[in-house]
Every structure is written in C-alpha cells, then in structure tokens.
Image 1: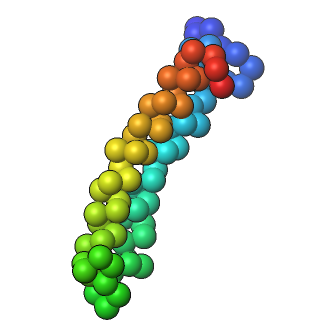
Image 2: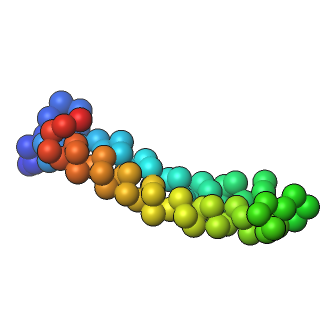
Length: 79
C-alpha cells in the first residue's frame, strides 16, 4: 500500500498553480477565437483576426516562461 497523506495524495505530489499560465494560449487560440473572428476593425493595417493570432502567438512563449519561472521558484521553496 502506498504511503499517503491525509487528503488522498501521495507525499510526492503537490499543487502547482504556476502551471495555470499554460491555459492562456489555449484560451487565446480556441476559446476567444470565435469572438474575435471579424475583419472590419483593422489594427496596424491587419484585419483584427490576424492581429489577434499574432498577439496570441507572441503571448504563448511568455505564458510558458511564466509557468516555468513559477514552478521553479516553488521547487526552490521561494513561494
């Protein structure tokens, strides 16, 4: 039988809230996309949908970096 703490989780498992940053690209690309699917407003000379995809593409590495930074800080015991 496994060694478990009071909560049903094994001692090695832990919550990692910093990984919630990885939901940002998912939300920008899939959830919000039907709402921004329009051409009429142009931003920087681009149709709004193209601008949104560019913004989401640039935000993805930022979200991954924030998730990694938060997870590493938690591993060192800083959070």
